[in-house]
Length: 148
Image (cartoon, rainbow, N blue to C red; front, side):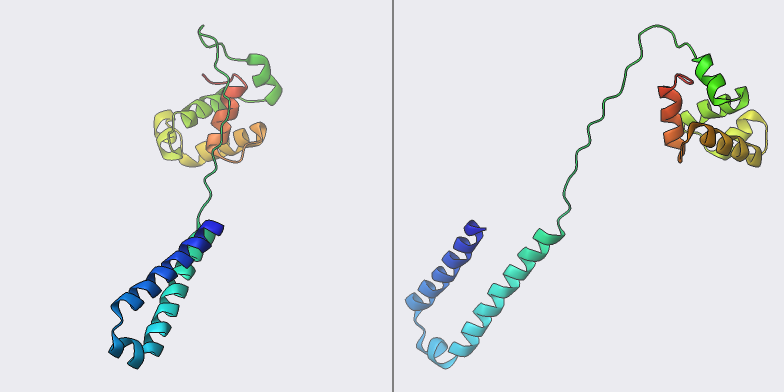
């Protein structure tokens, strides 16, 4: 903050020195009120713009999250966890397709069922996993060992 105050003071001093060196009698004497008014307006405009940019600047937040890496062996589904949660084979199949990034319509076409059926299975799956979004369901499915 002190740096900015000193910078603005230095700028003001430079402007005064420039006016003294030039010493246009007509400009300084006849239009002194306009010049000083303009300098003050310019100063407050610059300070206002600077403050506006400082106060509305978004702070960057870096989130680092550790993800467990599965062993290099082949994927083995956690059948006990699947039974504990009460997830059916069809719901597990839909969870895998959700994790692949398919939409409800694409899943319905792939499984030869209606889109409403996919929505029903998805909502039951989200309820069993306590997930609110598709991405959260896929992440929980991977953490529980239900999908690779």
